[in-house]
Length: 331
Image 1 (tube, rainbow, N blue to C red):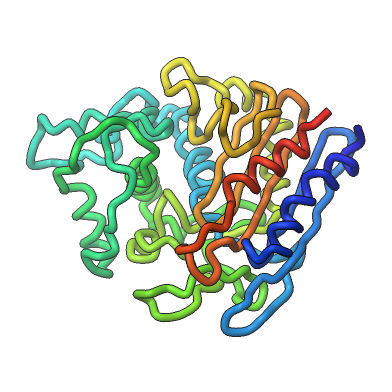
Image 2: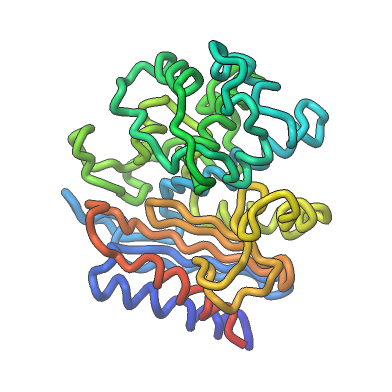
């Protein structure tokens, strides 16, 4: 089956979701070794308070794709350079983490555990409700006695990894190079709108949606902006890197479903049931996602503004993501 035929099968669920009013708009983009790439947009980039059409060049708030596209490669680069060891504690770069209790469990958490979401940190915490002073909030996160639970996917893991990057680099994340084709903000006229925010009192467009990232003035778990083309460029770079599969498909010391910064293909995941074992992926709360299939040399990104103008609506994003992946991977 040609790439164009598979693309048509994969694009149909997105077009149907837009027509049904479940998502305002979206972009699907696919690349495959030897067959090039295809991109297509549908629907609206914004519907409140005005209307703008979605285009293939629309910039998206990538939300938690930041974890995989920005933070993970930089932490792995520090490990490769010998600055850190992945199985060493975060205190290697954050010696003041829970500094008033040297026996605190938080001081034993490692870089690898954070990358694979294998820590006792809670899934999320409304850090932004404690104020807007970014320095004070950083101190709060570092010194808080966190409630301990079973390992779950946690933003706190990557907030701390972001702090570690900042400490090593000597500057805030938003002062770092986001990578080719990426940014930490976007021109509103070129960006997909996200939520009509109840505490910032405006429709967010071109500024980060994630509440904690906004309050922290940049963070390791969210805040990156990019286009479908920039994500395909990133994916093609990984597909061409000879060492990438060994690093990004390693599960020995992690959860069966997670690797360094990514999720691995497994039954019921967001990439669909037809992905081969050598596939990794990640999604973002705003309605974004990127999947990379090392076995077939294929990658795809599905970008939507599914939380515009509100997150409190069942957009059916999970079934849309799975249907897209199955359409692309059907024989």
